[in-house]
Amino acid sequence: MDYSLCVAVSLYILVAAIGWALSWLNLRHLEASGAGIPSGFEGYLDAGLLEKIRDYTAEETRLGLFESVIGSALAVVFVVFILRPYDEWLASFGLGFIAHGVVFFMLLIYAVALLSLPFSVYRAFVLEKRYGFSHMTAGLWLSDRGKSLLVTTVMSAVVIGAGLWIIKASPGLWWLWLWGFFFAFSLFMMYLSPFVIEPLFNRFDEVDDPALKERIREVLAKAGIKVAKVQKIDASRRSSHTNAYFTGIGSVKRIVLYDTLMERLDRDELVGVLAHETGHWKGKHLLKGLALIESLSLVVLYAAHRVLESGLLEAVFNEPGASFFAEAVMLGFLAPVAAFPFTPLFSWFSRRHEREADRSAIELAGDPEAYSRALVKLSKDNLSNLHPHPLYAAFYYSHPPVVERVREIGKMGG
Image (tube, rainbow, N blue to C red; front, side, top):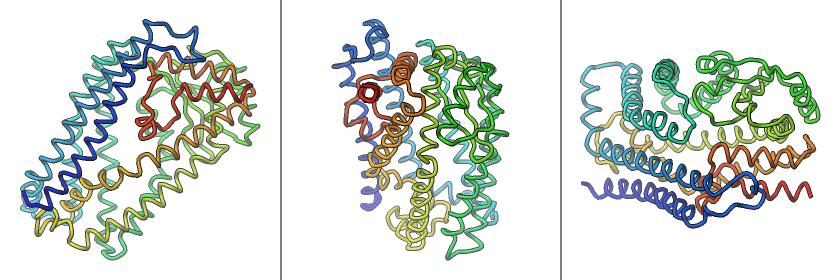
C-alpha cells in the first residue's frame, strides 16, 4: 500500500476507533454506575427496571459497535481494492457524464442499503422485540423497506442528476450553484414531506381531545405561533417508543404526537412536552440550525471544489486518471476525519438549544413539575441510559442527559 494511502486509511481507522472507545467507555460507566436511582426518579424506577435499562443499552451499544466496525472495514476494502475496478468497469460502458454519475452513485446507495439489511432485521425483530418495543410484522417491515427504497431511488436520482448537470454546466462555480440547489431542495422538501413522504409510512389523524388541543393552542399563542394542525400518528403499529415533533415550515407547519405518547402521559405532561417543542420555534432554533448548516455546507462545497481541482486525491489514493465520481468517493472517505473534531462542538450547540427549549417549556406551560414528570416517564418508557459517561455525552448527545435536565427543571420550579 502506498505511504500516502496508508496514512489516509490509518486516520480513518483512528477516528473510527476513537468513537468505538467512547462507546466502550460509556458502556463501562453504565455497568459501574447504573444501579443507582437518580434524584427525581424515585417511585418510577426499581432494581429490575434499572437492570433492564442496562441490558438494553448494552445490547444496543454492542450492536452499534459491530455494525460500525463492519461498515468501516467494508469502506476501507472498497476504497483500497474495489473503487478503481468499479470505476473502470462503469467507464467501459461509455455513458455520458450525468448518466455515468447517476449509475455510479445509485449502485453504491443500493449496495449500502443491502449491506445494512441484516442489522435492520435484527434490530426490528430481535433486539427491539426482546425489550417489548417492536410491534413490527414481516409484512409491514417489507412494505416500509419497499417504500423507502422507492423514495430513496426517486429523490437520489433527481438530486444526483441535477447536481451533476450543474457541475457539467459550470465547472468553475459548480460549488456555489450546487449549494443554492441543495438549499432550495431542502426548503422544498420541508414543504412537501408532511403531505407526500410522511403519509406513506403513517396515518395522520387530528387530535380528538378538544381540551388538549385548546391547551396546546394557548401555549402556542403565548409564543406567537400558529400551526395548521395538531395531529397524532399511529406509531404504535411499529413500536412502543414515544415521541413528539414539529414538521413542515411556514403555513404548513404542524404538531405531531405519537399515539404511544398520548397513551402514557396525562394532559399536563403532554402540554409540557409540546411547550418544549414550541420553545424551539420561539427561539428560532430551526432557523439558526439551518443557517449554521447552510454556512458550513457552502464552506465544505468550496473546499471540495478546490481539493478535487488540485489533483490531491489522485496522489493520496494513488489513483491517476480517476473519474470525478471516484474522487468524490475518496473525498467522502476522508470527510469523517475532517469532521470528527467538530462533533462535540455541534453537540454542544444542539444541547444549548435544548436547554433554551426546556426553559421556554416552563415559561409557556407554567408547570415544571408536570414537564419533569413527562421527561422521567419518557426516559423510563424508552429505557434511556440515565448514567452516560460525561465524555461520551459531550461528544454525541444532542440533548443534555435526562437526569441533568430533570435537576435543572427542578431548580427552575424552585
